[in-house]
Image 1 (tube, rainbow, N blue to C red):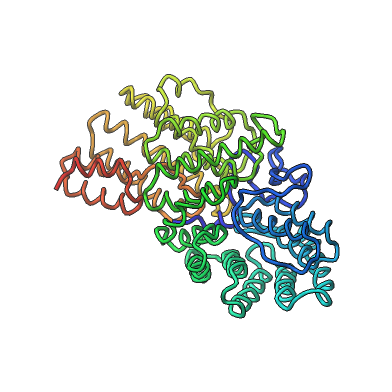
Image 2: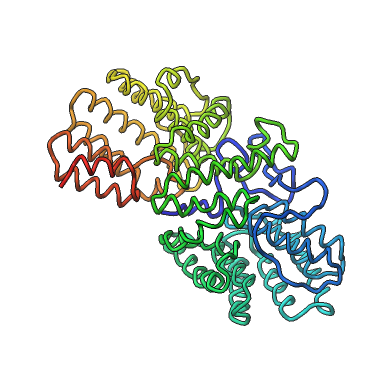
Length: 522
């Protein structure tokens, strides 16, 4: 259910997320800035990002305020703004050990972004400096938190031995302070970042995090950091419904935090609330647009540089495509297509995700508009373009033209592996080709031939190697639904019911499959 690689690499098609954001603002890829550009130009407290923070050893009220706000922003994944807040706390009280700890902690890895050794070195130095200050002016709790962070930065950055040492040290602190909400949340977050090579490893890490977060939520049901990470943990563990009642209130509790407004969709999608997933991301996208405008980042490229904007767009597309929401899907998909068409360089992973814009056009746009789209320069996006054209031609009942578009879909060349999306790009081309073959066969009233093509596509779609990387899924609807429809058209009602039930297992409450089940009957 949950993307493995996404926990260390949140994809951003053709924009700013092919590599993690860093402390260095100049880090770029595809000519775009990777930093979280939501920090204000001058230090200021930023409300509306949820809860977080705790009393620290400082006599400067401003330092305490910025420290607390830095914790809130970090928990909401407003990364650069959090770092800026912690830096202001340090400026206000240079002798504050926990302010230095906060700057080092906020600048570290997250479940979406790793850190290189070169990036960790100055963070380790900050933690060491904080440890020196805390010897004479800190509490035992503060010294323990600083020591845990020192362990992380000896060999950490995302899935390394230092991250495991940090998680174990935080777990010991959670046992020592069993009612400390911040320690519990940070410990849960740390477990989600420890090394995981298989789906079972990820689930185990999530299962270590969940009881910690459940304890916080039992004490304080509106704790936004706990809700944020509980949504992540339950999704990874394959139990998204556990977070549903908390997801429903997260936007209200953190209305300015684009990422937290988006986060409920990670629950909604997997429990079958596709329209809610679409709506949450539409709101998150608008917050991103407003942030870009407020920061003076010129359109149209400015908002695409915000690190979670593309994820919000594609997750909104995932929900809208499943829900049948043409308005939202086209509003989100058309700008993605326009941006994609002119790109000349991007990794396969990014192209797989960006293909959702073409899926939106294929599903909801007028066929003439789809057929007028220019061909993208990048191979996987060109395949998505051929697919969209094939769907448009299928609506016109032109089987021969649909087959021509299927034949034009090229299998991506070059090395294939599971880490950069190249295997998924290859499989996406196979799925697209098979689906169009099935469409053409159905137009020609050869449902058994169509069933064969749709069945092959469904098996590929549901295989672990295609499902493991993208979140939301790389293909926008359960193809097994088409397989069931073809079986029904061939007279195999029992087979159609069997495959439709499988489709609902794979994609909970899929509206198209539910409608097909009514047609199949008892």
